Amino acid sequence: MDLYTAEQMREIDRKAIEERGIPSVELMENAARALVEEVRALPIPGPGFQDGPTAWFTADGHMPSAEEQAEFWAMRQRSVLVLCGPGNNGGDGVAAARMLLEAGWRVRCALVGPREKMTEDCLEMERCLISAGGFLEDFNPEDRGRYVGYDVAVDALFGVGLNSELRPDAATAVRRMATCGWVVSADVPSGIHADTGGVMGMAVRADVTVTFSRGKPGLYVGKGAVYSGRVVVADIGIPQELWPEDQCRTRLMEREDLCIPRRPADAHKGDFGKLFILAGSRGYTGAPCLAAKAAVRGGAGLVTLAVPEDIYPIAAAKCCDEAMVWPLPGEDGAVVERAGGCNAAVIGPGLGRGERAERLVLTLLRELSCPIVLDADGLNIISRHIDVLDEREGLTILTPHDGEFARLTGRELPIRDRLGAARAFAQAHHCVMVLKGHRTITAHWSGACAVNPTGNPGMAKGGSGDALAGLMGALLARRGEPDEAAQAVWLHGRAGDLAAEDKGEHGMTPTDLIEQIPYAMKELI
Image (cartoon, rainbow, N blue to C red; front, side, top):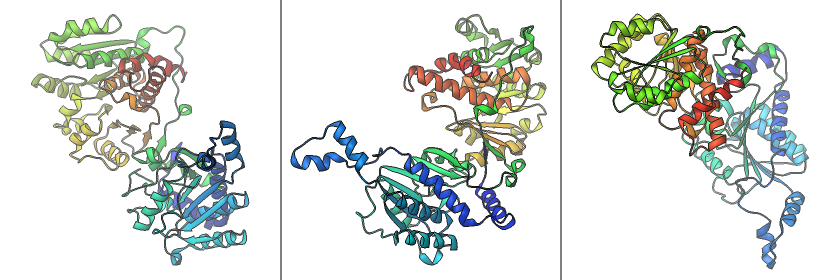
């Protein structure tokens, strides 16, 4: 699914209205209908509801049965609080308030912001609301009781247009919405940056976000991926031909975008690539073995795991029979020769930062022409030698988490715009940047970015990144194309999801994840 920035959305809206002659109020009505559809589908009461039938029934000492409670909620008039800004996002909310009023809901609709800033479309929606018997009142931040406890709150304060922190009255409105059972945001949760997913001071935590026409990056990256809840993309009537797909630089990865080809009946191991892994050091024997096991599960034809001689017996025993564990010889030239016979290389898991490790990393980057995945200590070493990365002609994929990325770039933590930062680095250094974390971002040097929706908190354990590096290396050894990086990220997250379903997020391990890689791959064949 393509993700469009706020600026792109404004331009497309303009073309639809000015060049195609689609009335702006028609688009607004369509947006409101999509909002209302999601509001009416919510089960009442919601997860944030603080009251219920017990408060009424127990006044006379009677405790209601489950059947009585169900009947109470079915008969009771549903209530909605619609808080609107003066812009067109607010107009969407006012139109939704009218539709819910006409559907029999108890509606309170309030304007948060100055009336003199109301757009013409928002004013038109107010006139329609009044004709239907409703009223757009001015929000009173001092009135604590007026705006709390509704079944549903609709957030129509700002949408994609906000680029600064919320004003005090809007911040109060956000707090009032949090007392309601469900919170549904129009387009983008207020306080979330539509492009970066950053929280601007404070923001609405939506249960559902109904975003209009196309997804926005900020709904899927950063804190926006958490605050947006379930995201529904609603068509509001903008013609398909107005969407500049060739100009869209960010995409949410979906299962339908990915494919793993079936193996030919007459295939042999050489058809699926040879992978070289340089990893491990004294005290770090788990990382190389996890990378190698993930590479084997990822379908590589041959996996060579090169480790320092002093940990060779441990690594050989841990890797059992599937990977070829090779003790590093004393001569660097022999390492280059062995790696040069492979189709891809993974460098860095548990490697350490010693003198020889650094020399080998830099030598392999200079001498190998095959795709290289740089992970862990490989990243720490290259952070001191960015010139070697810049000089390299072969495909290089970097897989840092935020801390490693900060060392690579000199940025401070937290990284406020992970999408923009990953894209800028990839373009500046002609590489593929895989910025790991919640909603891992894969950025290509062309400027194209893929946001990954798979994965879960159970993967936040030492060793998960090593598994990703090995899996990515296996896919690169097979085909050697840059888009294999994003596919590896999706498969890694999906395998983690399958492991969590089986073992639970608390108890699952990177080994459990690796065991699920084949099942994740089967879904794409």
